Length: 443
Image (cartoon, rainbow, N blue to C red; front, side, top):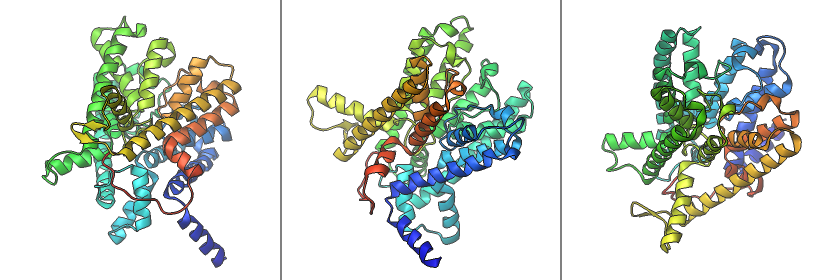
C-alpha cells in the first residue's frame, strides 16, 4: 500500500503544473456534485444527479447558469455548499491551501509556487507568497464591506432574511459568480440605485483582478514608482469598453426606452457591468433584449474580465494585445507597444493562441448544442458564450436543454474556468517542468 501511495505521489509530482490545476478544479467539482446530490441539500422534492453536477460545475466555475432554483430548490445546507464552491472557484482552489501552508511554514515549496503562478497568471516580478497573503486579506476586506452595505440596502428594501441574502450575494458578486437567491435575479430591484451600485462595485473589484490592487498598494506605499503595464492596460481597457457599451446599450435597446432616464441609465450600466465582469446578474429580462443588444453582450462576455481576477472570458489583456497587433500591422511597425513599452513576442504568441483556443471551444460548443437541441440558434450561441465566459447570463433556455446539452455546457463552463488555453495545454503538453521566463504582461 505504501509503495502504491509513493508511486501515486511521484506520478502527481511529474505532472505539468497546468494539468495539476485542471485536476484540482475537477476534484472540487466532483466533491461538490456528491454533496449537492445528498437529500439534505434539497429544499423541496429531489434534484437529479445531472442537475446537481450542473450546479456544482456552475458554482466552482463561478458561472451562475442554473437548471434548478438556488433559492427554492436547495436547502440552507445546499446553498452553503454552493457558496463554498463559489468562494473556492473565485479566488482559485490553490489559494486556501497555500495560505494555510504560509501560516504554518512561512514559505511555499517551489512546486506550489509554480502551480500558483499558473492559477493566477501573474507577471514575473510579483512574489507569489506575498501575493497570496494579499489576496486573502483583500478578499476578506471587500466581501465583509459588501455584506455590511448589502445588509443595509436589503433591509431598507424590505427583503426577507437580509443578512443571509447579503452574505450570499456579496460573495457571489465579488467572485463574479452570478448565483442569486431570487429566481428573477435583481429585476425587482432595477430602480434601487444603492443595490445596483454595491453589486457593481463588488463585481468590478473582483473582475479587475488582484494584480491591480496589489500593484496600486505597492505604488501607494512607495514600493514602486508607478503601476505596472499590466495594471494600466487592465484599467484603461475595462473603462473604455464599459463606457462605450453603456452608451450603445442606452441608445439602442428598445426594452428600456420607456423607463425613466435614471432607471434606463442604471439598467444599461448594470447589464454591461454584468457581461464584462462576467458576474451574470440581470435587472432586465435577457430573453426580451433585441438581437443587437444580445450580440453586444456576447462580445463583452467573450472579452470578459482580467487576469488574476475572479471573472472569466478571454481577458482584457489578451484583447489589448490582439488590438496592439492589429494597430502595429496597420501602421507598418515591427513591434507591439503600449505607452512606449514593448510587449514581448512570447506574450503576443500567447494572446493569439488564447484567441484560437477560445474561438475553437466556442465554435465546437455551438456546433454540438445545435446538434443536440432544437432551440433557436441565437439562444444557443448566447448560452455557449455565457458558459465559456463563466458569465451566467441566459435568455431563459438553460432548464429546457436536453441532458446532452447540459453536459456540453458543463464542459464549456469547466474549460472557461481553467481557461481554454490552459485546458489545451493540459491535453497536449508533455509532462515535466514548466519553463520560466519574465512576463511583462499577464495574459
